[in-house]
View 1 (cartoon, one colour):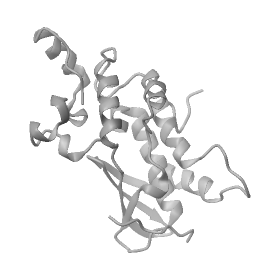
View 2 (cartoon, one colour; view 1 turned 90 degrees about the horizontal axis):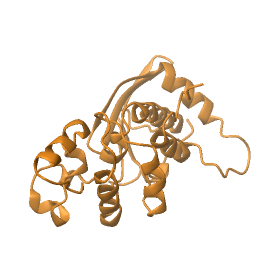
View 3 (cartoon, one colour; view 1 turned 45 degrees about the vertical axis):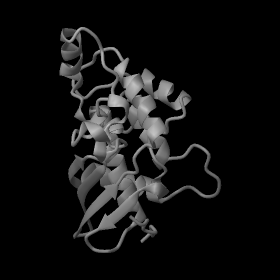
Length: 204
């Protein structure tokens, strides 16, 4: 049976950020409400670099919410670039699940802690279950296109603006199309390694 959220290892890595394994105290009531909202109330989810924007409607009120995802540090980006560069060619947007284990073992945190995500709302009110709902919807999008998990965490400065911003000549992760990258690398005779203040959430 296919998981609704976290069908891939990449999606599950983000799901663990939303639903931590080690929980003490009473159940988090926001989680089932957020899953329900993700199913029926989240619309127009878009991903641009490390920014995720979506509309959410609850009880007749519409909210436009933006999540600014923190990027990997230099060491994590290098590790991710190397691992993805050595991966077996896959369809566009896809990445093999085993890379999650490899990157985690190398000290790369696939998904950020939810408290480290910068959140903005057009209503100036940030409700925790709404943020969780957007995160659940994002997990589904990552399950469909795992490469988003790396693009979300890659520095905007390495999206092709300038080779001078790309450390050690690495190819920016966000600029990679897995469908064409390997064919181009073979033709070239080898392979190339890839390369705000926080808002306090309320239960509302």
